[in-house]
Structures are given as C-alpha cells and as structure tokens.
Image (cartoon, rainbow over all chains, first blue to last red):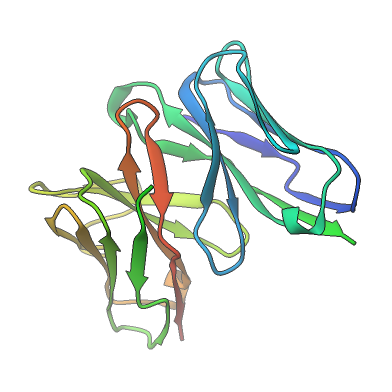
Length: 114
Length: 115
C-alpha cells in the first residue's frame, strides 16, 4: 500500500505570510496532484505535476515534484483569507493492482486570518 | 472538465436503514470512484465503479455494505446499507478524465448523519 504523509495537519497564519505544505512518501508516483476543498464542496484540482523536479506556478502558489517522484510541496506566497481551506495532495499510483488510483495525504487545514 | 452532481446533498437517517446516493456526470466517463471523508479529513477510496463490470472494492469495504450500480457511462449509485452511526460521513463520487494525467473531478458530496 502506498502512503502519503502530509504535513502540517493544521496551519493558522496571518494575511501576508508565506507557508509551505509537504507531502512525502517512500513510494514512487506516476504523478501527484494538489486539491483544495472548501466546506460543503468537493475537492477541486489545483495542479498536476508529472515530471521529477517539475515546478509549476499558479499565481501565488508554487508546486514542486521531487526528483524521485516521491514527494511534493506547495508553497503559498503572501497568503490571503481566500486561501483558507483544506489542501490535499494525492499521488497517482504507478503500478500494480492500484495503478491509476489516487492515494491521498491526510490533508492540511489552512486558516488565514485578516 | 466534467461537471458532477450528487443527490441527496445531505440526509439524516435512522440506524438500520439504507440510503442510496446518486452521482450524475455531464459527459461519458470510463471510471467512477466513490470516496468517504470525515469533515476536515482526508479521503478514503471505497470502490471503483466501471460500466459493464462489477465494482472493485478497497480493503475494509464490502459489497453487502456498500452495493454500487453503474448502469451507464454517466451515472452511478452507492448504497449505504444497514446504517450505524459509524457510517456518518461525507460520501463523494469522482470521475477520471484523461489518459495521461488521471485527472479526477469530484462531486459536491453527500453529508450523511446516522442517528
């Protein structure tokens, strides 16, 4: 079974601060996805990273996939109250009977205070 | 991207009863997934539903408790049978689009409370 360790579990910061969320695994994933979920909604895909070492930027969000495709990070610059939500990383399983399925991290609840 | 709707959006049920959750997609998709999520926590995959074949269940989930139907490429149902308070959770369906990046799109979820 492939596992994704996501940290931190909770993050409470002031508007304008920077933050980083980490996802780590001992397993290789064919790709890794980051989702954001607001209360009462399903998770919404933010980005998919596919290539080892890949860096993607989405406005104030920077996503990185580790060289070995076992870990990823999400960095938010100058956080805003609108960034508040549950952030989930999810690895796409690379092979075996779980090929193509998503393995989710535990999630990070981010609260940005005005 | 696929647009997914779920019915009901929420329900309160009595212990021992069953609830069927519907998932409708606005386009034909091959793979549909059912997840369970405690509020503020991560998602746990219950089963994968493919049209024309039996659903594939993950460890800890069985067909008698969570029967799934997939009558066509745009629709699926998940039934939570003989419910107990431990089944109180958010149930989400998702669909897989894309041959390369296995992008999944999620429905809004069904919030279930079992008394």
